[in-house]
Structures are given as structure tokens and as C-alpha cells.
Image (cartoon, rainbow, N blue to C red; front, side, top):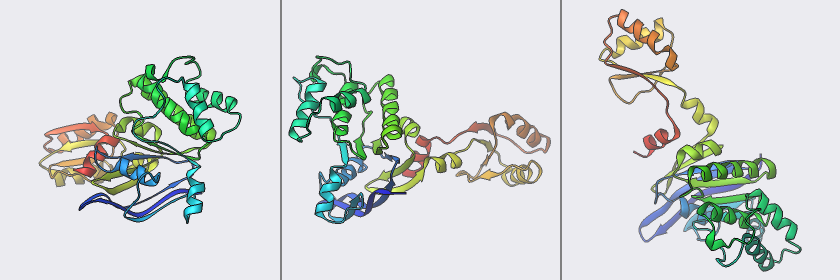
Length: 302
């Protein structure tokens, strides 16, 4: 599989403060890579470094296997970026903004390309409406359209759903999936809205205090976050023996000394509880649980 982006041991310092601390990651063609982190964790700095909007103090960034300045300049033409607030001319329509962009970048006969791009991002029917009158969601879409007009193979999006309403977030997710599946565009998307990022990303990286502290695929996460039952008991060893040896359930690692985490479905809870009671094992609490992405992230950065 083709490696689209490779970051090796990248650091970025401001004085004595590390904004990026020896970050390494790789993204393959077709990935939708979700970059997770709290505000100030280093997400935007990393995306700006990848886009060459700022330069790292050390380490390397290779896009499409670029090794030198000439190859980098070629590679940058394959990248579309929307970092922070989308920029456009307030007095222009969506079409006019894209047409102006095409003129500046010497894209000849852009009419059909502009219409197709506006259709992809759901802005075909904005007509004479000026950018200054766009909703936040429409402005985000035009930012995506501007990045799309040069037909990128990699798109870098920084907090693209921040401030959108629930419908806007859903529409944005469907648009990203469509661009990925139909046009084969690879994405790296930063967000702190983890429930939504989970629905669109295929791979995740967790950044905290400038360090990439975890990377995992969605499939890996789903396998690790299967449903389980939390049992609170003072008879932990006796309960563990019963659950594993007699009931034949597996146990997951539990953080607390008075808990057992049983790999089982919610509908099996009553049967497990009954067997514990019949065996005179004290049960102070028992309930079904599921570790979602937000809980996983919180556990990592605490």
C-alpha cells in the first residue's frame, strides 16, 4: 500500500516549550486519519508543519515520498488544506470565489470544474448569495471546495466540524466519506469531537502535550472496546475463579482492585449475577459497559 505521508521524529519548539515533541506517524493511501487531542495539544502545529506553513526544528516530513525541495514542491500540488478559518472574499459568491482561485492558479477553462466541485460539497444551489451571508457550515464547505479545485490526493482539515450544528456535522461526514470513496482522497482530520470522528475515521492518532502517545486503526479499537460487564465485589479472587472456570467467560484488565471486567453482553448480566449470588459471592454492583472513543482518549491522557 502506498505511503502518502510519513512524519519522522518531528519537533517544533517555541523557546524552551515543545509544541511538537519527536512526533512520528504514517498515513497510507485511502486512510481517513483522525488526529485526536485537547485544545493546545499540538494538532494544528502538526498540520501546519505537514503543510509547510511552519517549519520543524528537527525531524522529517515526506509527502508522496518526496526527498528534496523539487519533489516537495511537486508533492504540495497534491495537497489541499483547510486549517483554522476558511478564507474567501466576502463580496463574492461561491462560484466567483472559485473562479478567482482558478485564475490566480492559472487553471484554464474552469467552468465545468467549478460546477462539479460545488456539487461535490453541496453548494450548487447558492446562486448569488455572497460569502458574507453564508452559514458557518457553508463557509466550511467552500473551504473544502477551494482545496478540492486543484484535485488533491491528500486533504488536511483542522477542526472542520467545530461550531457546526448536528445536521451540518452529519452532512460534512457524508461528504468526507463520499470524497474518500469516489475520488480516492486520503484525509488527515483533527478534531476534539470524538464521537463524530469515530464515525468517519479509519485510523487514529492521539496527541497530548506535543507527543503522539497512541496510534490505532478503527478495527483495532473496535476489538479492544467490546461490550463488557463491570462487577464490583470484595470477593475478587473467588469471583474471578467462578467466572473463568465455571462460567467460561474471559476477563479484561480492570483498574480498580474491587472490580472485574467480564467480556459478556448486557443480556447475560442477570445469569452471571445469579451464579455469583448462588455461590455466596458478595456483589456490591454489576452493570453493562462499553468503552467508547471518548472514554479511551480520556484514559490515555489522564
